[in-house]
Amino acid sequence: MRRLLPLALAVLVAALAVAAPARPVLAAADGSLVATSVTVGSELRFSYSTPRPSATNWVGLYTDPGNGPVGEAYIGQSTKWTYAPSASGSGSLPTAGLAPGAYILYYLYNDGYTWLAQPVRLQLIAASGTLTLASATVAAGTPIQATYTTSKPSGTNWIGLYHNPGNGPVNQAYVGQSERWAYTAGASGSASLPTSGLAAGDYIVYYLYNDGYTWLAQPVNLRITGSGAPHFPTTAFTLRNAKVGVAYSATVGGLVQGDTAGLTFAKTSGPAWATVSSTGAVTGTPSAAGTATIGIRATTAAGTADATVTIRVQAAALVPQLRALSWNLWRGGTVVSNGLEKELKFLLERDVDVVGIQENEGAAAQALATALGWSYFQNADTAVLSRYPITATTPTVAGSAVAARIDLGSRSLRLWNAHLGYTPYGPYDACFGHLTVQQLLDREASSGRTGQINDIMAAMAPDLAASASTPVLLTGDFNAPSHLDWTAANSRCGYGAVPWPSSTAPANAGLTDSYRQAHPDPARDPGNTWSPVDKTFAGGYGYDSHQGEPEPQDRIDFVHYRGPLTVLSSDALWEGTPSQSDPSGNAWPSDHAAVLTVFGVG
Image 1 (cartoon, helix red, strand yellow):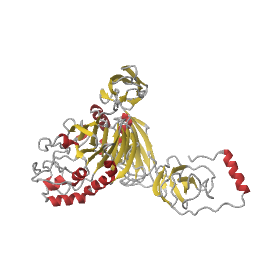
Image 2: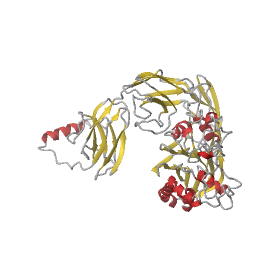
Image 3: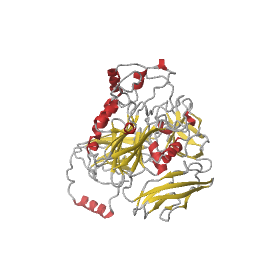
Image 4: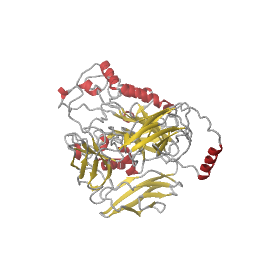
């Protein structure tokens, strides 16, 4: 809520208003404010501009008529507000919990009530129907039962289940794929959504119009609880490093899977300096370097689970070695059953420090960070996930790339992460289409990848210039091969050297491909990341006549670096023998191999 004026100040303002012969002339409302009516529960999005930017300019929403600053002076509290600090920009205000009706939006100057633009009148509109769940909590494996009504029946109305927060249509527009869905024909009726294979956690159900994303009713929150005995994703794993004489904090509180009703934690063994709270927080101040091993027991109404955790206590640099991962999560891990648990297991067992995530599907990184107690920065498609604190971020570049500054103790790290366009796809054009090299390069440009990687390199230039003191990583699914693999000495599909732009651009900017640094011979160590799942071409991309032929395998996922880092190892990783025809039961939750590079930090 916008803060109230203190009582004494309010009295003074009133007294001055009585005494003053006339109100001072105010500067003209010479900016702009644009917004439109929305359904209650959606975010109210707006754009603004002003020749008088200030860090404390703000936008406030008031009922109409109500207590808005109609005379450019305080009358009463706003219902919602946010700062709008730039000369131009956009923002949003939540409307959940507000009553339907008439409202007015003000754009105001410098923590005050002088108009920067003409106010905008709008409506918060009640959704036309109803959506009711039989229960706000269901056990995993138990179907969700819903009933609905609408004044706009359609055979393609539908309900969809999404993680909350996640990739649901919060603004009545597509963000990402639903976890489960079903059609809801008729003006009223009932529907069921299966929950088998879904992770325990918070979800939200939307009732949507005509194969689209317009709300027919207010969304309904839901919690899916685990079933079965409690268990950790793996029984032995390492937490973030500690420093001698420095207060330490980590957590295991979000890791337990299964039935977590009444979940508590306790320490069963380990050094005296380390304590484990009932909520799973691991804290203390170590007094000597070495490896601390701590036994932890989780207890719920359904049973107990034990884990052994390790903490490396450092006397010098906090992070002398860094384990960096590039990982496409394949629709946020939703294609396989229990995808979140499988992702957690891999990250913990591989002792990963930082991750560049692609196919984030709205909030996969947030779900992982919540479970692990890590930091994250994400957009709908890409994310940075870190065991160590993220201290600064860079907004989306080139459509989906993001970046974050990570505190490693004695130095920081800049991690950039990208997901480049996927069509047309170079290995198909080469192996199926047999295009000339110049045609391949032209197709790379038409895919958008060439422009994307050039834009990313331009955005990275200041970080690359400072990389002697702050090392830089570029992770990503580039959806294109490397010029280091398609060489005169290593023929691929009959080609010699092909200067794939998405790999030559980073190289020309001074970045080094860490996998090829560790494995310089592409014939002996191809390092293919596409695909441990797809071994047979399924068609599409203009090459349906090749359906059923072997899928071209290639290395399209990367960890590039520049700065005081030394490659100790680099591997393309996956687990089990993934199925292409029925991937839901795969142990590996992705259709890409992940790239894990271990660096020595200088």
